Each structure stands twice: as structure tokens, then as C-alpha cells.
Image (tube, rainbow, N blue to C red; front, side):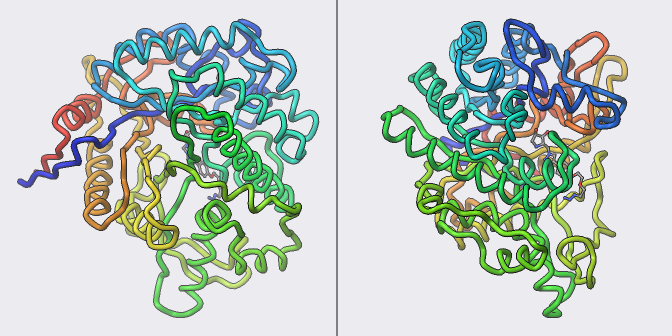
Amino acid sequence: MSVIQFPKDFVWGAATASYQIEGAWNEDGKGLSIWDVFSHTPGKVVNGDNGDIACDSYHRYEEDIALMKELGIKAYRFSIAWPRIYPQGSGEVNPKGLEYYHRFVDKLIENGIEPYCTLYHWDLPQALQEKGGWNNRETIDAYLQYAETMFKEFQGKIKYWITFNEPWCVSMLSNYIGAHAPGNQDLQLALDVAHHLFVAHGKTVRMFRELGIEGQIGIAPNLYWYEPYSNRKEDVEAARRKRAWYNEWFLDPLFKGSYPQFMVDWYKKKGAEVNIQPGDMEIIKEPIDFLGINYYSGSLARYKENFEDFDCEEIDEGYEKTDIGWNIYPEGLYKTLTWLTETYGPVPIYITENGACYNDGPVDGRVRDQKRIDYLQKHIIQLNRCIQSGVNLKGYITWSFMDNFEWAEGYSKRFGLVHVDYNTLKRTPKDSFYWYRHLVRTNWLDIR
Ligand SMILES: N=NNCCOCCOc1ccc(-c2cn(C[C@@H]3NC[C@@H](O)[C@H]3O)nn2)cc1
């Protein structure tokens, strides 16, 4: 047996997001979000599930925070539902929305839990979508108004802010692949959305600095690692394109103020290009305080002519998979973070999402989710490798604190340390909850 010790100030946390847990979809003046509309559209979500009730955390947050206290986490990452604050996306503020999040944040702080707040975790006000959504540059101004309101309203309470969760999901998954809201399937549109998110991000960081807001601000891309199937040049290039689809495209603008040229050229061959206005790239590269990294998986990548978007196929035989079908690839986390540090410098990093889908349920009142414990342990071991290799790693926030609405998969996929019975809304800490509590309390990992 060996022990892995983490730095004494290492931050252990857990994460959720507004649309996935809150419910109360039309309560207290909240406006519609694109996920209310998408999930109410037949055929979009498994079993026709939606977030109308979800975990009912809007009403049960005190119970949830008591469980977080028992878990012993020092950080809780959550998101604000923009349509609770600005039901029409901009204009008049909804006081009941602000009141809810003040009660919620005050309860976190009362329990010694640091709030890590994501401003945008996919639930765009529908009223803005009806004016073009993120494809419309004017949405940037609405986002800035929303962000400024939140910065001023929660000054001194919330000290860690994330502008956007997973820009790849907001742009590519939601506007090119079409699996998430609003469900478009247009590469040019996806590139425009990604660019507008970046401009909104950069302007928000600049505003955060100009307002002199106390705290730190960052962004949380989702990154994947692809290894070439062989050392053949075509496989190496195919893996490079597949990684860049997720990684460089969403990191180069932040740190280099430019898009990766080889991918700009690749997209141009596909008939799509980025519409950059003068000054955009300078704004986008406004320095951030930290980078949130969401990492789940990766694969082997092999060249295949005219296959899908990148002449690249994933070869994932041999990888054990979770219940959502994603490869378990812990070394990919090490490769991703060391590559990121070598490429962009020692930017402070929090893992803002990492976790596994296993659908175990209670048997005799206990949820035996040993596979989730194994997944978490394998990935947390890699974090220690990263720290030993010079990665400026500040903390680990697991996805997710509790089972919740997993987007197009609905409630069929469970990522939580806490099991939620969606019929009774009963919360049951899983075996992984108690395993993670020991890790959080001792700050070390026993590897048996
Ligand atoms: N990639 N090629 N796909 C080809 C076809 O894909 C169809 C579906 O694709 C994807 C890709 C990625 C995801 C995903 C989900 N999470 C987990 C959430 N993270 C934020 C938090 O809210 C968690 O719930 N992270 N990523 C889902 C679906």
C-alpha cells in the first residue's frame, strides 16, 4: 500500500449546475431557458425527461448543503440560472431570483463552503435565443449586463467566478452536432457561436478588472486527449486535429490571441471560417486568474480518409467504459494537463469537472458504487503525477455532487456521489461519498 499526499491548501470540491438540479422551472418569476424549450420538445431527451423538477434543489438546497457539509468539501461549484435573474435575458431584474441565490450562497458560506460560481452553464434565456442567441453578437451585451449585475450583487460573497462552462459543448455539441440545446447543425454557426462566447468572456474579464471586483475569474473548457494509433504521420496528424477540435481551438485564443492556423485552414476546406472583428482577439486574450478544466475521457485516433469531420476514427477497443459509454483513460488527464502547461505556461488550474457515470442504485439502503471509486482514484492519482511534474494544480472539483439531469441523456445517467430517487427525491450518499469524504478530510489517498 502507498500513500499519496496532496498540498495542504489543495481545494477539494464537488459540482452541479442550475438546470440539472434546481427544478422550479417556472417559479418565482423565472423566464424560459433554451433547455426548458429543448427538453419539452419531443425526441430531444431520453424518455422525454426534462428539468421541470430535477432534484428540486431550488426548494431543498438546505438539505443539500447539509450533505455537502457532511462530505467535508471546501468548494462547491454551482451555476446561476440567467433566466432567474433576467427572465427576458436583459432589461428588468427579477428580485426573487437574486433573493434565491443570496439565500443559497449565504447558507454555503455559513457552512464554511466556498462558492465557485459558473455564470453560464448552458441555460440561455429563451428570449435571447429568439433574437439569434449566441449567433447574434448582441447577446454579448446582454451577457455583460447579467455578469455585471452578479459581480456587484455578490461582491464579497462569491470570490471565484467562471464565465462559461464547456464552450465546446455550447458551440460544437449544441450548434454543429445538434445533440444539445438549441440543436442546430451548422459548422459556420458553431464557429460564430464559439467566437461570440470568447468575446463575451474577454469583455467580462476586462469588466471584472475595471470594476475592481474582489476575487478571481476564469473559464472552464472541456478537454479530451487523443493519442495517435501509430507513429505514422497520417495518424499523428489525425490525432492532432481531433485534439485541436476540443482543446487548441478553445485554448489558443485565450492564451495566444489567435486560433490554431492548421484548424482555421481545415475548417476553410469545409466551407467555414471565423468572422473576427477588429480588436476581438485582443479582448479574448485578457489574462485570466485560473483555468477550470473538465476532463472525462479520451481515445486512440487513427487516420481514415473522408471519415466524419477530421478524417479520423476513434479506436477505443481495449478501454474499459463507464455506463455512459465513455472510455476510462486516466493517463489522458496527465497528458492533457502537462501538454497544457508546456504549451500555455503554468496557468493556475482547477479540475472543475471529473467523474464517472455509473447507474448503481440503493440495495438495502446502500449504494455500492465501487466502480466510481475506482474511476476517481485512478484520476486523482494522475493529479499527483501532474503536481510532481510542475502543473500548477490548485484543486479538484468532482462531477457531480448528486445525480442530476444529464442533458440529452435525461435521468438515465447518474454521475453523483449522492443518489437521487427521482420519484421521492430522497438523497442517499453512495459508497463513493464516504470514500471522497475520507480523501477530503485526510488530504491523502491510500492506494491499496
Ligand atoms: N464528441 N463527439 N460526439 C459525436 C456525437 O456526440 C453526441 C454526444 O456528445 C457528447 C459529448 C460530450 C458530452 C459531455 C457531457 N458532459 C458532462 C457534463 N459536463 C457539464 C456538466 O453539465 C455535465 O453534465 N461533458 N461532456 C455529452 C455528449
